[in-house]
Image (cartoon, rainbow, N blue to C red):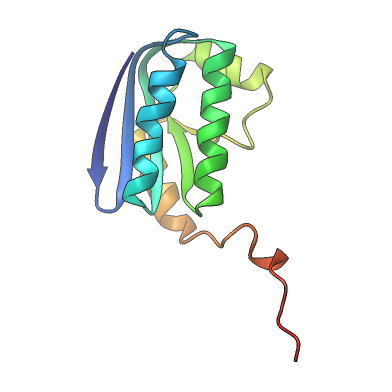
Length: 129
C-alpha cells in the first residue's frame, strides 16, 4: 500500500493506494500518525484507489480516528468504492468514519464544521479555592 499525503490549506489529504490488508496495516498506521505531528485542522483519507480493506485495516482507520479526535482533528473518508462502503456499513462505522462522495465534498464538510472542541475538556477538574 502506498500512502501519499498532500495538503489543501491547513487540511491534510491522505491518498491510500492499493490494499489495506494485514501486511500493510502497520505501515499505514505509521504514515497516518505522521499527519498528527503536522497538526492539521482536519484530515481526509481518500479511498478512491483503495481496492480492499481487511479487518485489521478497519482497526487502523478506527485507531487513527480516535487519535485524531483526541487531538481535536476532524477526520472524513472520501471516494470509497461500493465494496468498501459495504464493509464500512456492515461494520457499522458510518457514524465514526463519515464517507463523502468526493475529496472536495469532504474538505467542504470539514471547512463547514469548524474547529473541534477538545473531547476531554469537560472532564478537567476545576480549581477550587
